[in-house]
Image 1: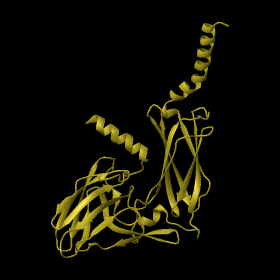
Image 2 (image 1 turned 45 degrees about the vertical axis):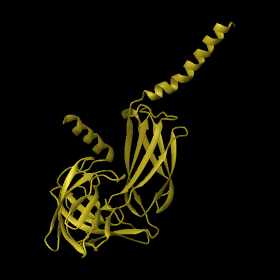
Image 3 (image 1 turned 180 degrees about the vertical axis):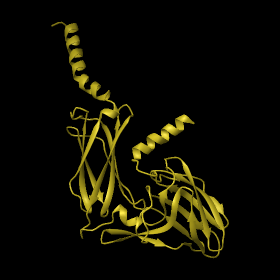
Image 4 (image 1 turned 180 degrees about the horizontal axis):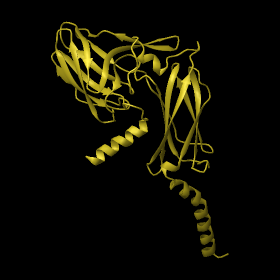
Length: 298
């Protein structure tokens, strides 16, 4: 075999080897199926297995980067994240932790080489060690009231009191929701429960953090879709009658400063954000697509 023939033969072999990978890269996100299995559905550490296949059920060897986000049904809880770059026979293995018992929503998002994203949402019920947990219905019935239609969301922020006396916020309202309340997350023996509190107290010279897993402002019975990168109005009123009108950014998770802090009187409001949700039922990926469509149209 001459040198030219050897080069042609080598080139042909390389082309044949590249064909499966080339075909895989051309698979559309809509043709990809994601399946999730949890090694354990009890509070604590577990392993998530996410299998990636095409529409015909064929495993994809190295389809891309996988990101997993776990949220409890209640918007006041802290989400759990995990990532994996490589799969074995189309199966990603991710260490994960169920932080407390109750109803969870797990979203698996696969970013392909083309940049397209395939995602799927899964719902799981996680048991606490005592066999009990908080499900998504518990929250709406804390005060003996009937459930309001639509999903809920939670508002978080950082409030600093620059004054010489305490400030007490006694009410909140927003056109985005039928009911707006102050809540505190309490966790005892891996069981989470929400407690309604009458006010938010910001001591003189100190900062109050409203954050997932702690105190937050609950929006129940949404009147509108809360899409990522949009904003909603929020009005807070102090016991002295001072009104604080704020804008709140909708975001999947606070990643650094979202906005400029607003100073109203002695109080400074920073890092104001709320979780995406819809007045109905919509996954994180659906909301991102809807948000992109709104941006494109106007």
